[in-house]
Amino acid sequence: MDSSHFSFSWIFGSSDLGELAVWSLKKHKHVPFLMSLVAKGGVDLRSRQISQIVEEVQRVVHRLTTEISLQDLRFQAVPYSDTYNGNIKVLAPSQLLVTVPVKGLAGYREARKQRWRYYTLQGARLPCPLQDPEGLRQWLAVEQFMKSQWQWHEADVNIEGDIVPAKVLQVFRKLVENAIGTCQLSGEVSLLTQRSAVWVAVETSAGQVELELVPAVEIPTAWSAKARWPPCLTRWPSRQRVECIKSFGFALLASSRYHWQQSFLQAEQVLLAQLDEDGGCRRKCLRALRQMKEDVWCPGKRPVLTSHHLQTVLFWTCEKYPHLKDWQAFGKAFLRLVRKLHKCVSQHFLKHYFVRKSNLLQYAGSGELDAVAQKLVLFLKNPQVCLP
Image 1 (cartoon, rainbow, N blue to C red):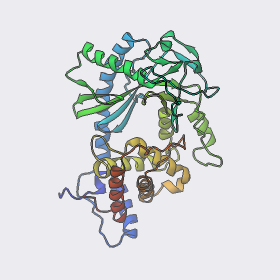
Image 2: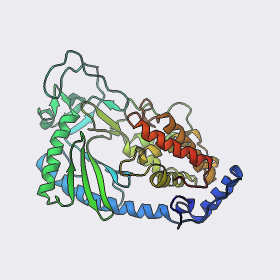
Image 3: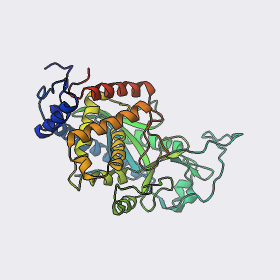
Image 4: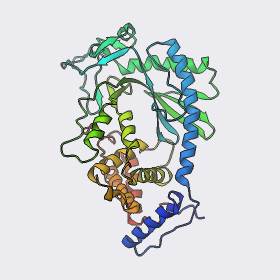
């Protein structure tokens, strides 16, 4: 087989492949459809590989965070799960996000009034206030919690009443480093340096994967004031589904210097899990999009596009096309999704589904996005043939 060509048979079963072929040939009569260049079952193979990676990673993470929780009561152990682990998010086959819950903070409420911050991480005073957070980011003060353990008032994480992410990460990084040695995992886990966040490399049977370990303040009792969702007159998801999703609340991640980043991983997972209760093919389209992204459009260890970007594209497309009839013809639905992805990538703009003033591609490399956009253009011109 010529490796410069790609066939959809790697991704889809024969019935899906035939459906996409028929639809595609109607639109592109001048190019024959390449049906059997490679073996079938790519999606199933990927699923098995990812499951094995997550299984190995969560064992390591559970050991490390259990040790960390013994050394510092402010951090909880990430539980081990035989099924789905909500603390582990697969962004790419070799890139995972692991949220490490903190404890000792309860009864969250939105800040009652705005105040200016003039401090620095080094303790100096600024002549002008720090920039206010935008998009998904926000300040976090101890007084925003009805109950807080005294450790969160300590100077190692607190400045002028604020719990500061950079200081939390500084404490957490040292705990991770110590836990690697204490758990005798030095041959299996290494702390990656020269990064502001806490990243570790873990050796698995499938090769090395990189994990971002992020302390997370879980807020299951409230919905973010910034997440003004859904807008009026939206038909998808249903009103009952919206209330269910909001009941899972949100989280705040320590992933920048001064500001905490809002995260809706649980709410997004609930939305994903209930996509096709009407019998549509939305999840199938997402799996196909993810496989194409990883194998053809945006491969590599640290891709500019992650699975989170793809699921956001799907959410927006579901909202625009809320009816079952829009998700019954797999080929048509899949290519519609690809067109939406191309639009977002070419414009370097993808709104967060819940906090719609936030652009998920704001800090992505322009050159990398343009390269992906060009591959998507070529694919949409001729869906039957792969990209070089």
